[in-house]
Image 1: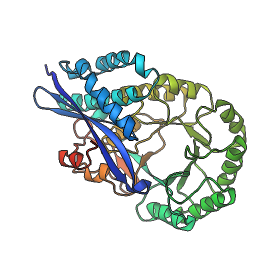
Image 2: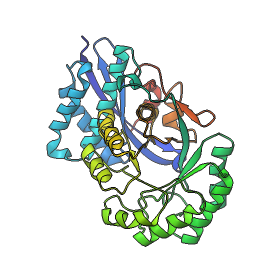
Image 3: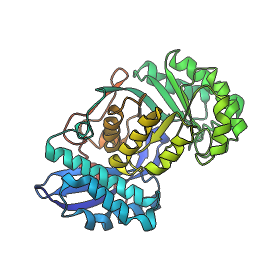
Image 4: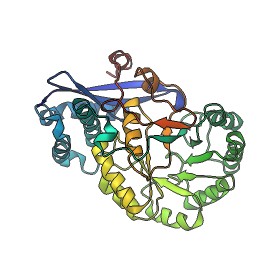
Length: 376
């Protein structure tokens, strides 16, 4: 019987080409068993302060993890969650810490059992998923942005694009109605008639319910697959008002922390596509609970895999495990935490991404790359 001997948090700060080269932050977790086998996890901590807090919490949680049998990973998850009730009720840095430890435990368990993650969670419903190019608009020219996103479909084969408005950079999409609609029109021309288009409002944009209705209706004229977070996720009344006025799917959930929060969102009846990030939603164990809720309600699951190859590998396995998944989001431009971090990056081919079948998560972060981008 294997025992866990060490748990080490490692945080990084890196430039993200898909976000105008802005600095983004992650905290990894390295868990080692007594036979030398290593499992890797990750939390999408986003900011310097939350990253430092997560790293400290992961270190303090080691007392609950070290000495345990990796096969008991779900019980470890429960005990970690129980410890954090005082400072992590329904989310926060405690959820980040729990997430990266949990993902690392599943990775370690799969390696010790000689199984890929997808087998551990019940098997693949399908062996590959449609790949969606998910990126942010940041150039001041909407013609440039439409053409840039069009190339992801025409030249790289993605089935469609998800464009984040209101992001850092000079695009300033989401602020001017006529300009926004013209961008979506140009985008449809650039990606062609059959490609999917998803628009993410971006949390910095203060749309009213009227703004959300007007823009979504106008975007729908150009073939919109879904509108993401058209309002703040806490605006339940606004979502209820929006629902009868739009035809497209409504997506939200990315900022929820645990199964209880996701249950409230789903039970509201205002969401069609439930966005969930394993790097903040209490890891693989927490996300499996979300998928169960999604399947029960017959809505759609969408993994927000916008960080490292560790998160992406786990997200693909989770997405493939359920029939309630439409696409797998991928960052289309090469970036340090996807392409530099691992020897065999997870890349789509002809619009499809294959389910990882190597042991555990199927990816192994390079120590040299983690050290290169180490956040100290």
